[in-house]
Image 1 (tube, rainbow, N blue to C red):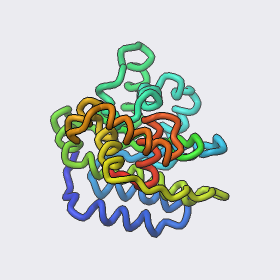
Image 2 (image 1 turned 30 degrees about the vertical axis):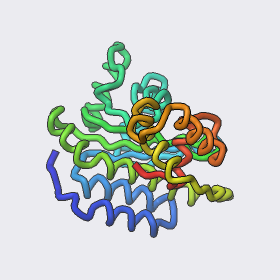
Image 3 (image 1 turned 90 degrees about the vertical axis):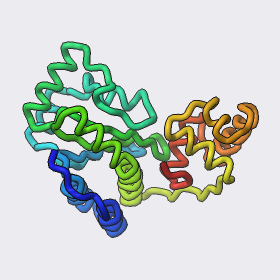
Length: 242
């Protein structure tokens, strides 16, 4: 990985997202994020409320076609892992133990996909699911340093990228505005960054019973079916930022 200065990168990309007028602009922005952060690939993939799929990013056309032809979605540990998780996922922490998964990774690397990856699952309104991935070829220590320095940027870009994609979705009904209390924001934010309920309660100096009250209140306001859904909706609507 050839590091580039990321000072101002986030501001430049967010400005580009604000001014995007079509899906083609999102493709150009995925390339810009790749270049601004000096990594090999940036990819965004979504499934909208009608079940239609859309993707943009910097993987080669040859790899995209091969992925589709071989139906790799059925064995891809990144896809499988992100469907089972809410928080950002380091590729090295996924299950690559099966022969099929190892073969898939070797094929991906041969087609220009880096050996390191960081994927952010996003769950939007009406069952929408999206995945934002940054990817590179480097050693573990170099990648860990990159993620440590740029994790917040990647999470913010993922959710803002998804917000813009939803804005561009035809016939979409805008989300109802939701106002959370300061304590509800604190609770959902800590849950979003990976704290357990016990850790959240300790950090906020409240009982777990009181924490449940805040979470249930936020869940009701957001129209969420459970806590994970509440955190996802709060992130997607900008009610919390991690």
